[in-house]
Image (cartoon, rainbow, N blue to C red; front, side, top):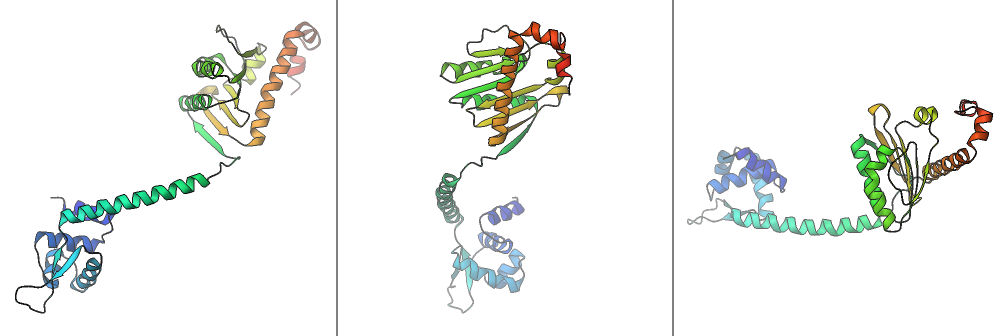
Amino acid sequence: MNIDKTYSTLKQYGFTEYEAKIYVALLQSNPLNGNEIAIKSGVPSPKVYENLNRMCEKEVVFPVLDGNYSTKKLYSPLPYKELLRKIELDFQNDTAFMESQFKVISNQMKPDWSELYHLDGYVSSIDSLRNMIQSTEQTIYLSCWNSELELLWDDLLEAFKKGVRVISILFDVTDKKIPWLHFTHHQGEFSDRRHTGELSCVLDEKSVFILHSAEGNAHAIISSHTALTRTTLNYIRHDIYINQVVNHFHDELAAKYGENFGGLLDIF
């Protein structure tokens, strides 16, 4: 018998250390008087009656009279099966009460528009974005590389099929036939140098997901902060705008800034 475990378990259900020792002593032998309880339980004599009075109030111990009608008080424990039923009922009542309170509290919660979460790790970050895409209802703006597009493809396609407006731009190329509004970033050293490991996504124009996975040190942030959401959305839009201009006027821009637009891109 693991007596210490028995004491610690009783303490989890409202017993003090002394009360647990007294109850177990009375289960082992009863009825007992105060001195006998002290000897059997190891509880100091001055503390026995103090704890017995409290245990009687809680109805886990009861005073009894011996057959000789002596004035000496004897004590017996509440049968352990009754104690277990009492604990179970108390637990159920407490659980029902806490459930009702938690429900009221959670219904009063209003999301903080400035919430900001940080995620470490590539797999956990991508999984979080997939979950966000699955719950999106209106729009998805996505800027990424084909490696991430491959991982997000099924969720993006499902969102598109259910009516979500998807707009994307890739830093490299893909062989997929993309059914939504899609753009390709200008290819070259600039993209490789400045956008390596970059992914930006704005969902329903209410939340933003930004991933950096360069050099294997993957981490992401998720936020519903209005400033961050709007800035990221404008970044993706402006990148699309600029790359459309580059695609339509490549020769003119190359003549002015060089084949790789170094005269423009290396300003800073």
